Amino acid sequence: MRGPWLFEDPACAEVGGDFWFPEKTEDTSELKYAKRICNSCTHKTECLEWALVNERFGIWAGTNERNRQQIRVMRKRKSA
Image (cartoon, rainbow, N blue to C red; front, side, top):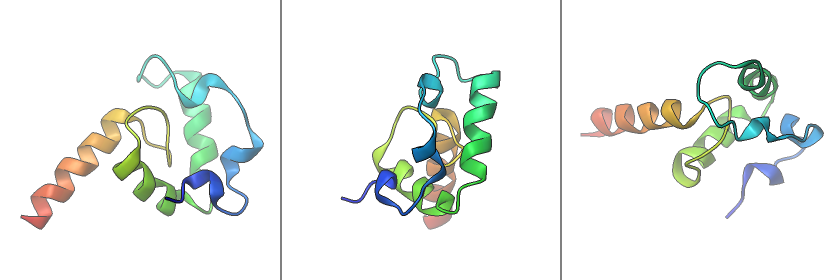
């Protein structure tokens, strides 16, 4: 499988840090910083698709665990 880290020049590759996996899901300054990086990335759409299938924890494509679960639920409702 091809993870988002294999995309050409993802914005997150330039930044390290534990803020990608915050302990709290509230909008802390670290969470806002991570989301801002994701929102500037040209691979946000592909990253989100990857995360919806493969990632439970962390910030991916500017979404946290709760955001991705909401998207999964909405998509199941639309496909039914």
